Length: 266
Ligand SMILES: Nc1ncnc2c1ncn2[C@@H]1O[C@H](COP(=O)(O)OP(=O)(O)OP(=O)(O)O)[C@@H](O)[C@H]1O
Ligand SMILES: [Mg+2]
Image (cartoon, rainbow, N blue to C red; front, side, top):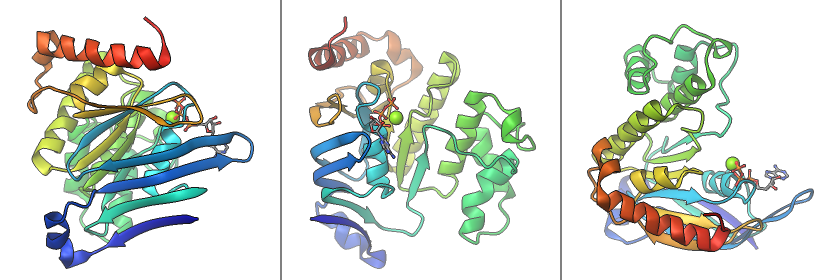
């Protein structure tokens, strides 16, 4: 049995909000690649609208595959994937590889979703998105003229440009220096708090997961199953100073210890 349902309910959004249907629901999802064998095994998962969830797990365990499955870029062997759609351009995606078009400038790359949506006068929106990710002076550069971290930031700006209500982010901060990483993490938290969107973020950093998300899912080695589903018990407002707060260090240690029990390490 295989089914992927992306349903658009337009003006019935109110009905959906009133119902308790999850934003994302995976039921018994299994994925197999002919050369890699089974990658996802019987994954069931619900993510409510407005949650900020991180996906953690070792390299090669299936995090990107799971994220692509949520985006509808992979089809399950068995099981079903449902994503509620309340508007046409509802999902922004940052790929692990920034996937910019080499023949387009940063401005043109970031404007692409607007052009595909037939939206005119893109300049001010592009400027705003680039400012948000600290790239306001890089609009005229081509991808080969950017550093790895700048490419990821351009990709993040592109994912935000249509103001999606679902953001799927695959290690968006991995190429960034620590200062930039935390400042972008702050910006993303602000967007999440203000716009009440749903975010699923793949990361290898337990610190990032603790500081940024409200719920951390830890998956096993391949074939991936969900081993832990942890609530992050920290206030919604998370200034940079939280990193030196004992509430944060206690929470980070709790999550790290749970992770170590599954994957080892010290
Ligand atoms: N299109 C594909 N065809 C065949 N195998 C694939 C494909 N995509 C992923 N895989 C395999 O699935 C497994 C999980 O890959 P995935 O990229 O999801 O891992 P990951 O957890 O995101 O790893 P990392 O942390 O290194 O990014 C790997 O063994 C990989 O080789
Ligand atoms: Mg990956």
